[in-house]
Image 1 (cartoon, each protein chain N blue to C red):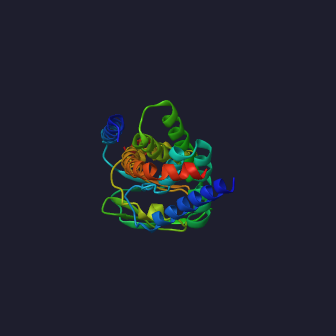
Image 2 (image 1 turned 90 degrees about the vertical axis):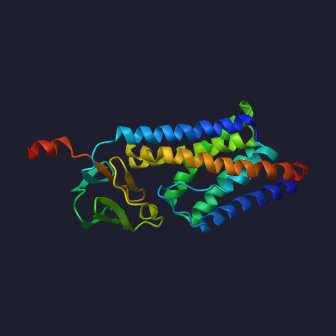
Length: 120
Length: 166
């Protein structure tokens, strides 16, 4: 291995660490809501405190979302690749689970402005 | 000519086989898309022992075959996005930079993951996927380095035979 290759590897790993920390700092808001999108449309929105099962049904297929103890996890999917099922549960703001074939996105957000205004 | 066909066929079969071996490894990481990229060992060997054109053809045929055999059409689309971007970057890096085979492979691994991610962003129209980027960057670097080191060993031993055959 050339010395230059080693430097490239170190630089890329350092960049990954910087991006990771940056993303975490940027999203250091309290996780409040689990939001489900299908394509660009918002499909459902729950408080992270809820414990429930929810079936996401789209034209292309379905995914089962489990909300438990502040985490969100997809445990069943109609698609063949099951990437979303294998992914670990998410609990931090900005974390995302995606089912590509069904175009389903599950992400954790801070409560939306609109909702905060409605409640106050 | 027939020797050439035989060598390309053999390398394509080998890449196809390595894709299969890869599906046997029960990798299921927290982040989708993380894998070793064993098939890239063949592509990078072809890039260093044969030429750009043959390496590209082997890579594309491999993606098509393994996509149709082991995964779904949607996964194949991401493989293509990653495969094309990664191949372009490896070919450019090999010709225009002084990186060794490990460096070229690392760039290939990283841009493969980037290509897949960008394809996914285009498909689902959401930037929130970029959340995966840091993990995929690190994983691409590590996997690319391993394949590159291995590729260096393989290339050293196979080059005389492959170049004689073609």
